[in-house]
Length: 240
Image: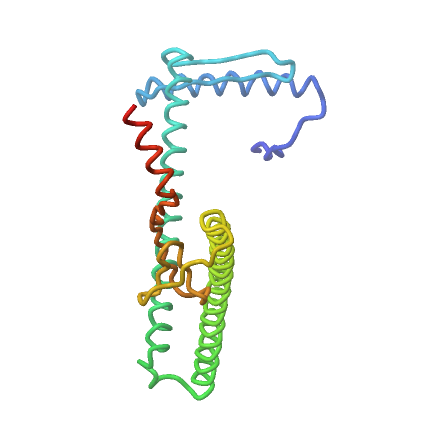
């Protein structure tokens, strides 16, 4: 009679478990050696028992087998990662192409092209989108105009302040002119303007504060107030 199949599960009895481990370990090492010899394969086998005892076999050396294993595993991971990355970018490119196609179709429809295949509901939706877009454009345009008007108002206020400052300076110059005339002519009457609107012996400023200011300073004529007797006495002193 043939032996019945043994269930592949943990053996509870420690003695039986140890015996089975020894038999199958030896068989596995034998098969590894035969595989390396018969097939010219590089084989490395590592076994740890339940008591952490090490059993190993290498057709060449365990170090070379491990290095070759690490290199092969790294290349495999790189290949898998490269393949996954290529597939990922292919999916991304396909999605972007589809998105570009949809945008181009929507743009043509907004421009009034390729409308023959649209239903009444689709046309209504397109009309609503266009009206919403127009409202957004008008709102943005109105906001820009309001900002420009506010900026122009601010510039106008600055110019107005500059005009007030210039008008104040003109008044100061007029007052200085009046003081200068009083010092030069004393209590005498100030000369009036000539036909060109300029003062003969003073500064001329028009009455209109907003009109251009024209200033001209003339040297007053020297007057001789000496009496004949004083002139004769002064001449005789010079002769001596």
